Length: 200
Image (cartoon, rainbow, N blue to C red; front, side, top):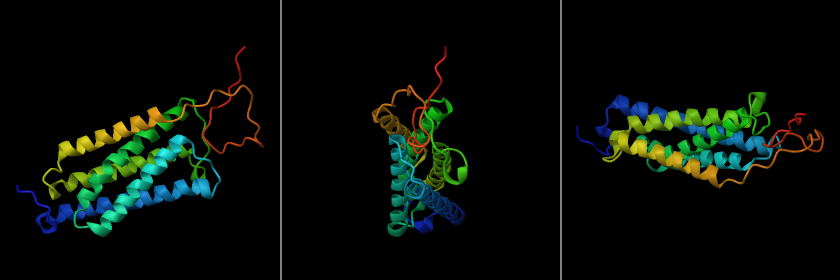
């Protein structure tokens, strides 16, 4: 089967499916960006370095998707493909962040509507976003000659490498506090080391 960058050369069902994945990815990234900003601007929470990485990635994905829909909406698969590395990078950072919470290395404030922590909600957003852009890139792989399964795998790998670089280069986690936090002067408004009662 010949491959073409022309919109009309794609099967109608495949094109519609790819466009639907693009729309889903745009909605998810918009919700993720809005929610992340509201945690800081609306709720007054302070983003930690890992939070900033995740916020930057989801905002970058939203910008690429928005501009792509304006400039090249006839190639929804390509637009999704360009967001694959950014999305998987954010997913990798979010997964590591949530791992630190689950292993009690960090404690983080409750997120929107009191449903889980901020890292947990971020991880959910990036999982949904990764599914949407990866599926869109897969269904739209005939839009460009080099857009295939191997390039999609390479894009995912690149994203995970970016995640590893972000984690490796982030500031070190502060030491465990020696005294309990003052709930008035030190409210849980950012990700921090939890205080643990010393064992005798």
